[in-house]
Length: 451
Image (cartoon, rainbow, N blue to C red; front, top):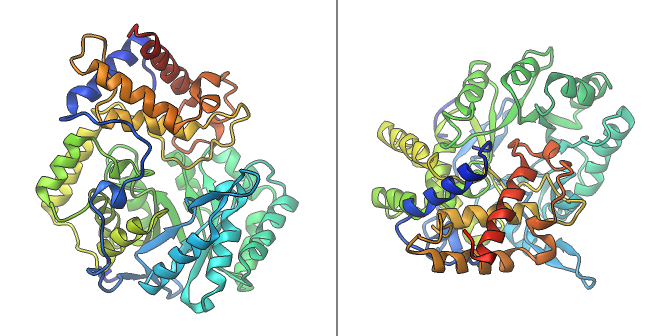
């Protein structure tokens, strides 16, 4: 194709590691829950958006290099205070994206507590069917019987108001290894059914999304099934340290198009520590921090599209600028990003991507909000080592005030009983209860002023 296209620490080790974040940060800020524009950069305009870069699929689709991940649609409250998708804002975002060349929209039955497919379908139905490609998934985690899997598949058509699905995925394989994969998709006969659906034209491209070990990845790749594409987590932080290069190269060898998820690691590569932000800005002050990650994802020729969960229009505009058209990385810039990734390893953040697969918690804990607040404070230097730290008072207040603002008290880490229900759903394989207990212990020491 043309190219134009650290979870095992004991308590003492944990508290010692906490202090590394403050030493690495050049300045101290409050851990507020306020949203920043364009991944922390000044407000952006759409005047510099050019022509979108496209890549070609095995079936001849011209797919926009920027894909819309529909897991993070803007939310609002209904009259009863329930979280619901803000359909008006979703419509506006979809309209703007299509107007500027985005044509790939990725959703799933489980996204946004089951609301994403319907909201995405409503927004897209207002456009000609040939203006977009829809991707959704078989999320048969809790009940993988043939009957339930087939029902979920058929329900996706109804929710999205379509009579064919452009890109259909077996959702999040790898967790539980080969036995789990076989149970969910092989032994129940659902793969054979989906292959026949592709032959009938109701599925145009069949693939899978992956979180797991290399053994399962290679097992599925080598099955006697023609895979039209595969979705993997790939970004410059994971390239050398989390098998991303291995996964990409295996797909490249087989000439299988790659769909990228988590190019920003759930936003973490747009919310770096002050030290790393300064490093990137010194190199290219004209680019947003996020654009470096998207340029990396789009740099590789077998990448069909790179998904971004753009909740805010300014994020959409910034990403459009990056891919309209893409400016490919030089060899020197690739090396620079790898050096940046190695520096990131020195910061004790928790690898939460805010995917919300761990939700809902049966005890009401807002798990992603707790972990993301902690990560934010590490990056901003608001995680003091001890009471002797010269910025202890300021950092203590910033952490505690920001915690209460970000996470209601009844949904904080103190309510975790260690039931472990969340762990089996985490694609990053975080020991969530352990992290919640450690954060809660740290919070209590700050409250009691005994750190």
